[in-house]
Image 1 (cartoon, one colour):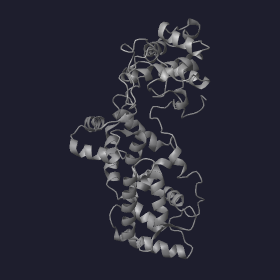
Image 2: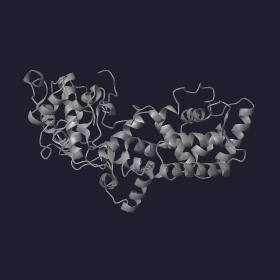
Image 3: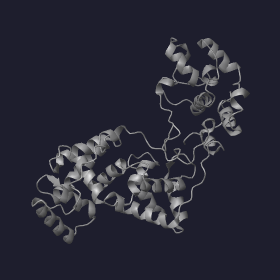
Image 4: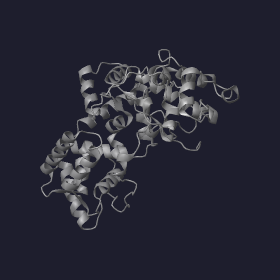
Length: 400
């Protein structure tokens, strides 16, 4: 839909792929396997040159097999047809190993030369000269234009990063929830994404520690200290993958001026307070922590995080639950604040008399803040297509 401002295309149907394993070509042929092989069967697999073993370790050159499969998908998406017109597995095997993929002028002349070139490079029969994933990212058809980002905003972003990762575990957890629930096309998220693209030197959609260190030091025009930035990276990279994706980056670097405004905190509080009792018990928080973080962290890490959050809350709340006043106090302060603590207690007394000093309790909670649904939300792409930059239908480039 060309009207969609956040169009993304993701190849994720594992039913259209195959696992490289011993005896693959000797297995019983089915209609389903034939459909898979139309996309995933490369010449080297057909030639049985792809060495596999019973331990299922990754065969040498397996990544070039994936490039072939991706090339078949691109061919189909751009031309509307598959490159091999076959009715049987034996015909497919014969054509894959003996026939060069043909690019018919009637279909491909309408596309850009760059589109045709990258697909041809992906469908070279010899895997040694087939284009690599890194080369595809640098190809003119895919290459993302370099993004600039003002130095002043980069300084603000680094300050937000440093502040957010040094908060208590409970506050960091709530900030992550808020960042996940805020609109994906909002101005705040868009600004952070722009900074992400600026730091992403190779355009692969993730940041390495090297990219963060070089990028921040370059844009800040001063040495922040590699060790300090490495520690910062380790705190952002919560799943220990060695890279930071855009969602982790947004969660860690979003300004608290936006994420801890009273209307946002009211929405967040009600997302935790599922039974609308007016308070959140430690058990409710414990359950939500385990549900959300269990999709990212190892079980031992989740248990440790839940225990640490409970210990933090027990230090400030003796009754085993948080009301909205206490929730606002925690989210608005990094350190104990006598003035805000007094205000919190006064606001609680006044609310008991029917006076809402926060002026947000009359708002109906947003039903869209469903924390359980966020676990299944697909990863956002920092290079997704945007309104105002829509190409012709036959000239759409992949979104990263």
